[in-house]
Amino acid sequence: MKELTQEVVTLLKTSDGEEKVTEEVIIERPYRVYLNEEFIGSALILPTDLEVFGVGYLFGLGYISKPKEIKEIRLCREKEGIFVYTSFKEIPKREIMTTTGCGGTGGLSYEMLQENPPPLFSYTISFSEIIELAEEVLKGPRLPGVHTCGLWYEGKLRLLYMDIGQHHALDKLIGAILLGKGPRFGAIYTTGRLTVEMVAKCIRAGIPILISRSSTSSLGLELAQKAGLTLVCHVRGEKINVFHAPQRIRESLS
Image (tube, rainbow, N blue to C red; front, side):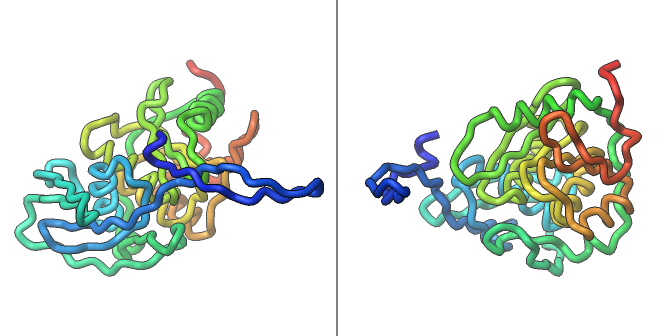
């Protein structure tokens, strides 16, 4: 993971004095995302897993709906561009809102808040699995100042992605699902807040259970209630707070 950080010399001050120490900071880069050669938007991200990010980013904005629409993905690292090619003859127009995502790079299609939510996949998870899922994600590869997002299915952590913003870590995870790198069913855990953008992307992907060590927002909760999404927050130690649809959480593994 050394290629994703750089060392810098800082001045550490304490009550006993000061000294120079070496710290690691994550690398942040701007990338431009194109759909069939047409520029869609830019994002400040951790420069890894770029293919899945490009697909997830376009899915989250409402441009891509199904895996079969994707024909090819190309990277142009010199121009910091991600090019996704689809079967579209015309690119659909979308009204994009800037969200609460880190760095102002989050976005959500306005239509996604107005349309009827799609049906969610059928899936349940036990209380003990939620605790194990959180532990598995948090003990994964760690970088300073990043969010992590994991997909759990049938008793195992299947996918794990990270980025500077929680919304882009989720973009990478959903992009990976669309590209067939993991199951489309299951539960997602994130270290970030469950804002309306996070909730909307999971609903659009059909994910029935969304879990966080942090909290939710009023619009995030409202959308979860509308779609019937199970929303779990404040996963710390042996405690969880179920904000909506507790029926998908079993007491045991059976």
